[in-house]
Image (cartoon, rainbow, N blue to C red):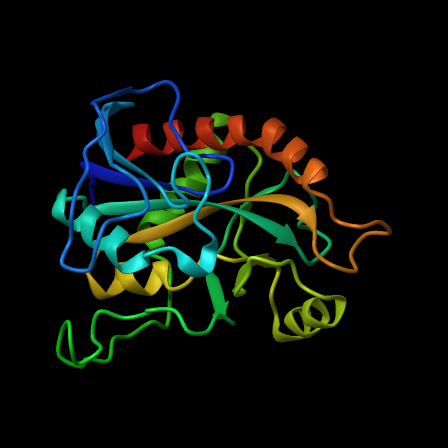
Length: 248
């Protein structure tokens, strides 16, 4: 499968793209409201790209208040045929140390109260979709292979646990998530993934581990620590995005 118009959803630490030639910001409306930020489109690594900042630019929208449905509708309106999301996450299992890049293959949803479907009987009639494999495997494999070809260390697989936020988790919550099989913990993986599936748009994500999850280190989790890891690791994420686009 060849993708020609790829959306990139940037999370914490990636509120704008640096490098590609992007057109002026496009302010769009959807039947479900405005997306988190204006859209930027242009050429990068030989592909048409559309960039959306999940939390706005500057970073201001908390994870539980992101209008995920408007974000996905806005990208669909631009004709994207694939979505690569970038997520800053905490690491739960030993392999998920700070600075690690991972490309998860499964997720567990612990969020609540979010508008998590288009098929709510109001916006669209009720439907039940298959979500056995939440990430598109063709797109996920392309990211993993692009990392190998570019010499970028990226872990293939893992389970992403999506929590409500914006607070970080307790030790007991992380212990439960680890028992459930989660390797990573973040706040924005859902309902983004399922909304993409409902629209029929292939979706995968790149996770940058920016801190040990609660109870996985001796000290307190601080924003200074997280920001330092983001500053050092997000350039590798940008390099991986460019390598992936060139491969698609």
